Length: 347
Ligand code: FAD
Ligand code: NAP
Image (tube, rainbow, N blue to C red; front, side, top):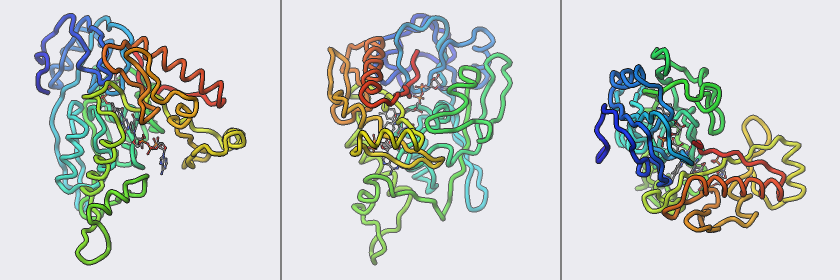
């Protein structure tokens, strides 16, 4: 991490503005950047954190943070060859996209659809990050996490994590109890399980000369990663240019009977089948139909190309964004009878 406050030093009154992708002003009463397991344990022995911070890309700060902000900056990647696959372990503070790029460049398959997601490796299991038809749980082996009070390092296998759609036990049942220190993934070597059938991905890989005809290349993780990066850059706002935290709300999942009642009233609404039954409706469609797309209120608003993304044009506050999000929830519920759940972690 360049241009960061010094590691392993307790600092007072640190601005968190450049540590959250909304670019919101909020002051940490105390701030500690941990770069080793030893310094992390040491910090926890002195004070329990009010907030654990990774890349700050899924966080809405609505106030100053009393007590300690613990910024995880543990680094390192190791690869364990296992024959026709590898197990790759990355420390929590590794940047997610740089880690994915490293695996793709090494020829390992599995994480390519998750290219260009901001944030850290350590936060990736918290909401079981997903994009373009792949979720973290599909490639997950295990993680290690430190219990914040006992300081025991525990291993969690997939069955312990309660992974669901943008969900895990770390988001609710065990929220705030464990600090994830590293995550291990099972990635393919040679024979890959490549998923190019989501949205425009196929079109973008074909444009790279991928196909069955002589002279064309065979589809690889690199082709998919390149396609996903291009699509994301064309559609999603870059937090370096405009403050945002990606999708603000989850896509609502309806039981089949609720969906049928909804679809009878809104036959043009897009929807997708859920593996466990029922259907998912894009929250962006609901918000756009309710008239919020491109809405601007002072320094904050709703993105003009993707209604699921709330934005801070610069100088807005977390409270204003939270109030706007509440208004959108109430309006969508009144117009469609569908409750939107916030995906972003609100502090
Ligand atoms: P933070 O925002 O720092 O933290 C998020 C939560 O996890 C907080 O509650 C925090 O306390 C907790 N946490 C952080 N680190 C740890 C740790 N080591 N141990 C325990 N708890 C921890 N998400 C997707 O799923 N798919 C996408 O395609 C996607 N696209 C995005 C695009 C943009 C432009 C943006 C801004 C965000 C996007 N996101 C996406 C959301 C976000 O990038 C992910 O949720 C990411 O995993 C958050 O990582 P972070 O390190 O920034 O977490
Ligand atoms: P999009 O492709 O325009 O699609 C809109 C919504 O419809 C998505 O949220 C997606 O659900 C759903 N969808 C589209 N095609 C689908 C399919 N073939 N099967 C199942 N569901 C489908 O969405 P986008 O905003 O450009 O984002 C593209 C991908 O990146 C999505 O997977 C999205 O989740 C992910 N993303 C996530 C965040 C975040 O912060 N969480 C931010 C940006 C992008 P899913 O979300 O379940 O895929």
